[in-house]
Length: 177
View 1 (spheres, rainbow, N blue to C red):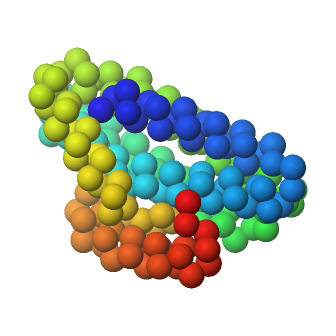
View 2: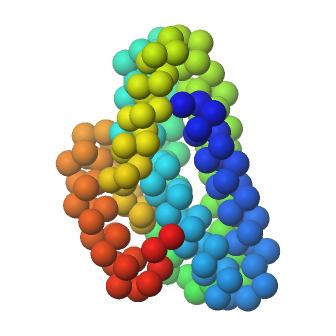
View 3: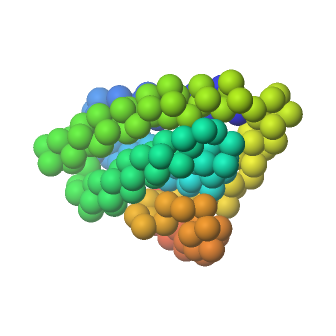
């Protein structure tokens, strides 16, 4: 589970660089679409499966999970705003750089606080179940940020509907990643 999520963090880092280094607005839009989709899906799966597990299984887990959820909410707000800015503009690049810094700091905190504790305190069977649960959650996760839907309950209640709408919108726009 931890290796899987860390690999996604590395992919997210690479997609930030690819989006920032794109040669033109069209290439930037294509890279950003992949970045936005992975961020939305990845964070939703963590909100549904990882943070609740940290809250239940780790001493002091509630404080750790609450801090990560606050960071994820802020990132969703920033990502939603970024979606409104045209690619290929200085404003887009500036906003993307700010989001990149926040997301990379957030990922570092997850890896050093949550992931380390989960590896230390859960056995291999529990970690394997959690990995499967994360991958299942990703299959139903929205592809766009939905600020205010950070709790596991909200993601289970609203997430599938939001995901259906997001995926339909992506298909109509031809932007499915």
